[in-house]
Picture (cartoon, helix red, strand yellow):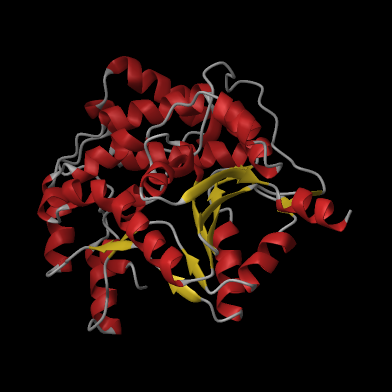
Length: 341
């Protein structure tokens, strides 16, 4: 319930951080299954004298039933003083009672519909709509209700269905599991975030329902990912599960995230909330918290989408520029074996 105030756009803030290659094709894909327990991803290490920041780069989507050896990571968390999450937006519900929340939920009914009650066939270019029909039939059957949704919501639903049919999921549970370990060991939980001021959430929802979104590019890029990138998402997921960062780096990828973020951040509601300006500060906010923790904690464990770590001009470069030593990905299991020999 805490994020109910963001109900009108929370789907747009979910990271679309999977990666893909443009040569796989979607036809004939088999369901992605990982058998047994895999070793899990390697970790980046940032040091400030004797103080260390361990960073696990998360990936989504992953195989739905994948099991990984989290014991070395959990032991590292247990010996740390702080656990840091990825940067995010945040809207507080403090001061809003239960019945007010129910009222907000009720006011959000119909929020995915086009303001002018148009169907996808009325909004999309003919060639794009033809592609949509083929993919919808393949992954969703003959659903008619979704035809009334805005393009951004319709394509997001199709993408989720395509992942499910391929055996992948965006709900990996990795961060959730590690947060439980951190809380159990009473670590400080660091949440780098930018707070969004929703002075009148009901009015914001009402305005969003009437706001046009420039979301055709988002829709088209999402179709691109579904048509050509599903197989390589699976390849990248397997590489991640075995700590194969070299393979992850070698795979070119197509992303719909920028276009879908832009559709909302640059809308009238997004501009009212200052999201267009705030989005650029996410990296900065994370680095500020990482720097602070490196200065005062002997050991900090952090989770963040791996795209932040693979970006050559991203957070690792900023930490290195600040004078910290940044080490390439380290396998905890290999380290454990070498220490015992």
